[in-house]
Length: 100
Image 1 (spheres, rainbow, N blue to C red):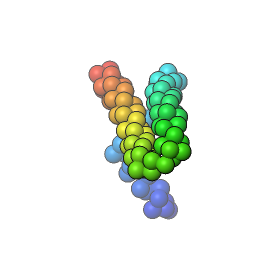
Image 2 (cartoon, rainbow, N blue to C red; image 1 turned 30 degrees about the horizontal axis):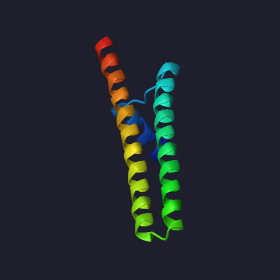
Image 3 (tube, one colour; image 1 turned 180 degrees about the vertical axis):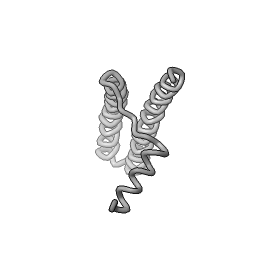
């Protein structure tokens, strides 16, 4: 007798089968991740320096504003990264469906 988990996994596989990526596809996704991680790191370094300078000057309103900007920028980069990866994945699905 199968467990509820096994039955659920079977139904999930039927509705949306898992996708196996090639090494090339994994590398493309890795490049996108690396690119955006670099952008995030660059932005963090820049804004952290600005935050440090504002704090040293006693401009605490600026510190708060810069911290909010840093959070928003990181979230935007992460969203852009996921959108770019999803666009790439969608392109792969289109090519696969055309082959069939």
